[in-house]
Image (cartoon, rainbow, N blue to C red; front, side, top):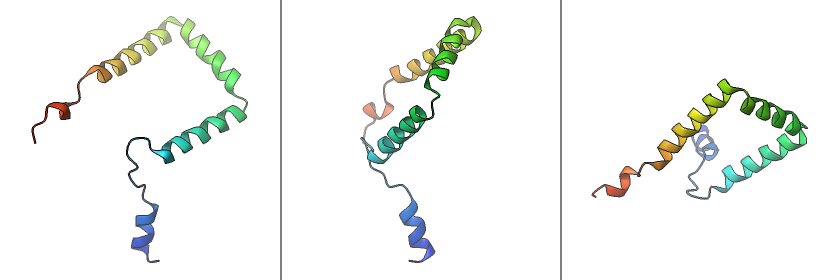
Length: 81
């Protein structure tokens, strides 16, 4: 196999909606995190952040920004082909 073919084979192929590779990688990362023993520590940190007014405000702002993007209609819906 020459370098060009090798480069092509290592590129991620588009699996479309329901990407199994990404889902598997996400699940594996979650399992590694649980096995790391850091779940309780991170939960305590998150609870602390919610209690901190400044951090809570930043988190709420980030959530609002994310939700505002999700609420917009996809421009492709009205596109004329």
